[in-house]
Length: 299
Image 1 (tube, rainbow, N blue to C red):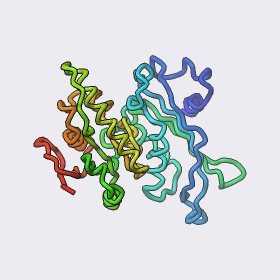
Image 2: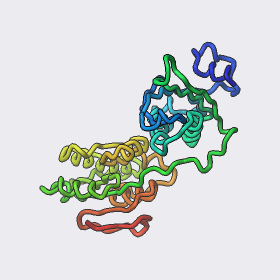
Image 3: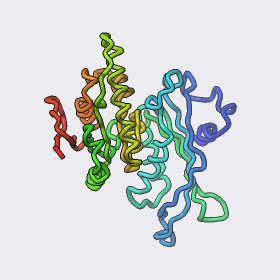
């Protein structure tokens, strides 16, 4: 086991031909990540945060992401740092071994990893680095119940009158004051919509018009950061950042997505159901879709 861990952290040439998987899996790594933690079994360690150094190597199922350049198809590096931060914040631990196992399990809860190699070192306990090294795979542990539930957002739909209103900032303040992550959604601008008479191209035009309106909202308030991918949405929710949804990518990628791409509120209601939103908040005189799967509040 120690040889296998050493090979995992070694230069790729050293591990060539020594992997347990065929074909040789891809890998991503996090090197020399430093975090403070109150950890340790000795009394003198309690209440005195010390530096921990994390090195992580994850072997991955091969994905076609490099062909499509699609961030939603890969394991984001943020998932590695989030796994570390989440377990450090969960509770005080005595043992690095326990921390390492929990971090590895959290990473393996993602769909792409095959194995996780993890080294954690204490940097403030002596003249050198004291640490543990582990390897965990899907074969070692069950991961069905490991996926941690992320924060549940509020989806807020803003009609054009709300976007243009002088009290827009106050409305955004009120949304943020509720404490949940906020994803803003908009409809099409009040312009004449181009008509192609061709359903696939019309769908794209409808979605792009909504995205133009998203950027118009972004110009009204610096908090309104436009995002297009699920990865960006997940990251923003965990950071407590307000975002505006540009729907084209997620809608077009969905196997069973919403049919009416010209109705921004219907798209917002669909997204709310897909990501488990707490509720959908609507601003303006709008008609709630009959198939909305989350509670609706009219602002």
